[in-house]
Image (tube, rainbow, N blue to C red):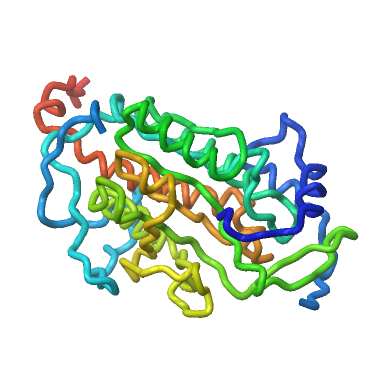
Length: 329
């Protein structure tokens, strides 16, 4: 997330480590880290279909061919009812308009990883792969949003662009860091660098100021349950008083969903909106995991399954109208 200050000189260094264009998106970060085995030296919406709300959340979805047991019933920390899911007219994947927002910009590239890679590069890589997967699953109107410019103006642009497109759902992709007070120093490839191995995990954020808050919470919970089912844990530091102004109410302690009312891309969008911190890139071990195809695939699978669950099953009338395969032929 972009909130953490950092030294400008490190940002300048990071620009020199970007890989050639022909490198695989799934492997570009892994390739970047190969051969870097130096030991650490720590010292320190108008057009979308109208939907009626139903009173309870759907059962947690699981990946295709998964043998995992259903997630246990969730318990709430905040005094909020179970999320209300969109119902009524179930969406058609081919018409469903999802915006995948790439967090930060090339000019304001977010947090710096422990190995001096800008967050924007992680965000872009993961967001592109999520879009490709959703498109292959029939969600052909999935839109990748890459914004230019400096920090706050770019946030306002994102919300305005999403609203103008009349999207059905908005998902912003980020990778996490920590406040400066938790940073320690180490040397990576001859450069003074910073890390914090104290915290790790994904987190999901929604805003109560979003006009579709209940649907936002429902979608975030769907993603979180899928990530948990894959054995991933959420970042629990946002519940701690030591986080100061970055402390947030935990809405779902099973799915790892927090309330963050003042995020521009969540409160100014007119459709359900969720921000996903996919993992911590300031944590040296998790940074390597986030660069791996295996970890990326877990996140991509969780998001894809959640989008399918949010969209809902194909109406029976449509399923009956599809051509049936004759088993005798």
